[in-house]
Amino acid sequence: MENIHLILASKSPRRQAMISGLNIPFSIISYEVEEDFNPADLPDEIARKLALKKAQHYPKQLTEGEILLTADTLVFIDNTVLNKPANEQEAYTMLKKICGRTHLVFTGVCLKSKDKEISFSEQSRVRCKNLSDEEIWYYIHKHQPMDKAGSYGIQDWFGYIAVDKIEGCYYNIMGLPLSKIYAELKTFTS
Image (cartoon, rainbow, N blue to C red; front, side, top):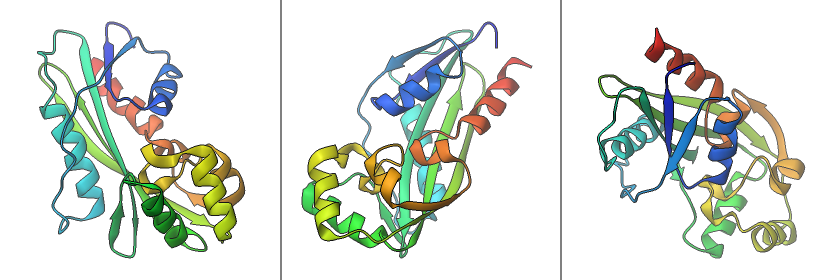
């Protein structure tokens, strides 16, 4: 993809590493946006609207060839959105809730250029094994999942030992549905 420069609006080291794998020139920007949402919305719409909100609050003017990428990932189970935990106890409660069960992961994405905007969400299904309280607390203390939706990373110790089955895009669970993003980016250059 020639003549484009991607601007990733994310502090997430996982998202930054994934984007670098696409071999598209990119830079990183970080700015704060309130991540509040309407709990009456469906989870795919919550994720999409949060990504859109982040794009709308981009503090600069996009120039020719620049494409802003914003994203938001959430975990959904029991008609409840699990975002990032506020503290270790909340992380424990979230992990206890998803262990031994299947949950959904939604990532909302917005791609925005000077004159075009696309937003969408991707869904993956994740089944986790039961973990003991000791294993859950070990994970929380050793891996500090406070910056992760649902309190876990599929690419770390929790994913290695607890994730039993996934349906859908693995990278979506990490925070960016890369195949879909790449396909949508091509529409900006055609």
